[in-house]
Length: 79
Image (tube, rainbow, N blue to C red; front, side):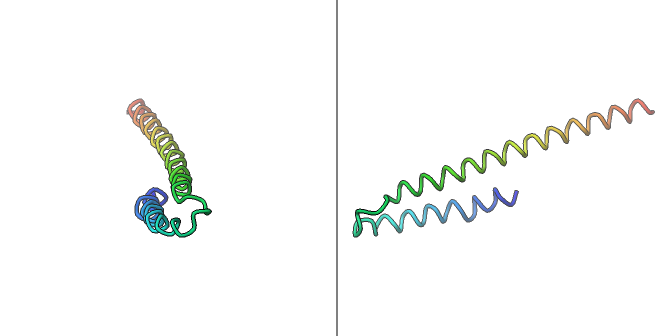
């Protein structure tokens, strides 16, 4: 959850803020990489990281649910 929180509260706003500020400077130095390219790369990394995290969380919750079901079924058999 820390990774997701960091992405939402820090990484995404910082990426967008830097993009907005850098756009102005690229007019003065047109030979540099366009800020859109950096923003796209940053958002792609954050998206991939979030997808991986969501998959891991979904799998963990699924295992947790299955474990709890087995526990309840075993408890019921013992009664």
